[in-house]
Length: 559
Image (cartoon, rainbow, N blue to C red; front, side):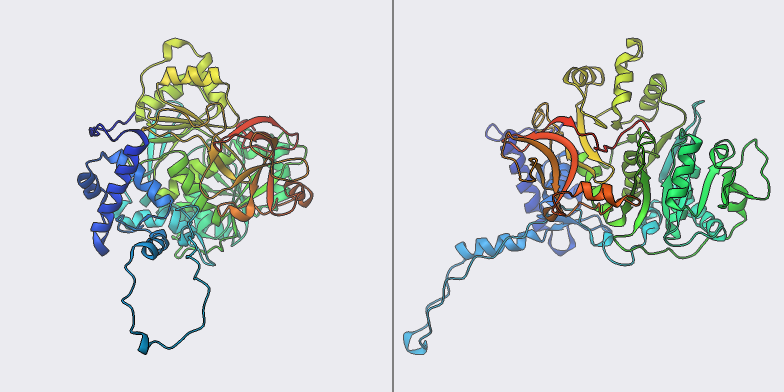
């Protein structure tokens, strides 16, 4: 765990200390003038460690009091200070000197002017680059990291089952995906086309996804463990334009498939109907230009569990990038010096959102580990790469619990997050003792991303709402509705719902293939999105889970 080295004065402790530190940072940003303030200068001026300064600046940015320039990385005063300053001026600015009565014409009495309304941004991550009608997605997720002279940074560290590590840099990812985009275009893929990717975790998966986004297409991941019938259903239901797979998994593609197929070379011999992945890539000219998306356009299509009688297609629109970035920075507390590992499979929604898209969006390294989950392999990964920020599925935590205690060892972990289902208190306590860091539950669905979190604050070791799901992230208003669709009072049980009108980060519109199920999500009108999970709200704003309705579709782990 990262700790602060500064020594607070006796009068400054706990929450008061955090407020004083935040004010010191705010004053430092103000003193920097139009050029903005560097993080290093703010740390020195306020006497704070890097971790504390970064965390407090994120909190100030979330409330619109500071903002960070995406290019220079310098901090400036935020827009919400304008409204706050106007309110303060109304009270503290001295009145103008009186005008002599003879020079003042009589005027009719006017009612007093109402104070200006404060418009506070619900989230610091409603960025302009995620809005509009021509959003260069491939640039946001890859090319800008190359142009920022950081192209040598690893976009991917891939660990084989045998323990061999290969690295794919952002510069190499940009080059290879531009070439493979040419290959896909030759297979007939264009804007809006859905491309099924049936691949194990590896560099080819990242290259294929970026190539699809260069063309303005829709990335559709398929679990490597899907049955042939599950693959066939999704290919037909999505009207996929093309398939990217490998020689081994190609046997799950229907024999009567008429779509073009690109396959990663292996031991299998390909006929002329198959486009070889690597040899075609290397023979192709890199595609110039990047397709633009509208903010409501889908760039990924995620299907629900194989166990569903009729699996549902969930489109992921470009505007969801705001919520993805917020969760990475706020919900997961991902810091610049973290080594981040999302253990989720990239065929699962959580793996796509926060293990594939999220790291690419932030210019961070994705870690992929081949093969089914194995406790000893997981422990080896944690120690080999010095992982500090880990997010796992409940089944993986249970596997730790059931493993031989002899494999337990000291890790570099700073924080551990779990998504998929609420964990029992005894398992959380065991994990905290084993890895010696907080284990925090997070809650969300494929349709929403994560929107309720238990956030860790090193200045306050207590967990918010012990035993609860946590509190809503900024950008979401979460309520509990009774059976008639009315908001339940504190302590009243009901269904967890998102107030769409007051949740600017909410992005779900409808399922790709089932308007009836869409209507059930909004059965009290479009004002509220219904999760299908039951809970109650306590007086501190914490949401306590109480059960799952039969049609709830969580961000499950085990498809």
